[in-house]
Image 1: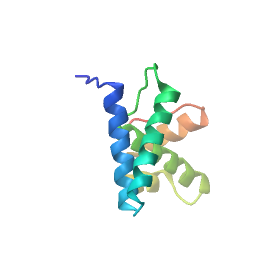
Image 2: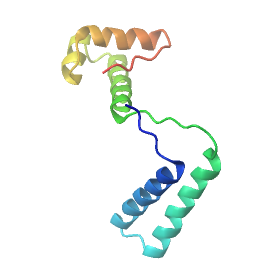
Image 3: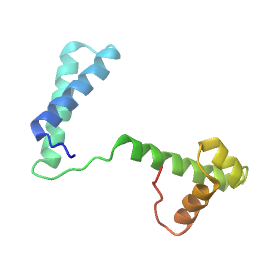
Image 4: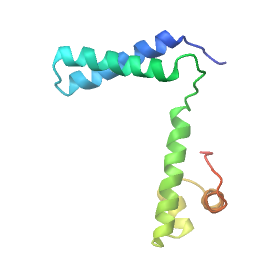
Length: 110
């Protein structure tokens, strides 16, 4: 089931997240509020009226993992089996990731 939320709700959430991060870092309250609004306004100006899609975090993590597997493989320090064990995937999956990379494609399946 797909959930749709309004742009206003997304921007409000972004403002809250920016505020929380800055507060945790000891930034003065007046600066926190101004920075959060500036970020939200900038996003609204840049993407207003557009349909924007965000990948789920698990997909991002898989892509990040795959890039790390490729980087480790290219060092020549790891066998495919060692990479599979290190990253908790099958040897066949490591082969697919490397093949997709060499072919210019993306392999993002977890």
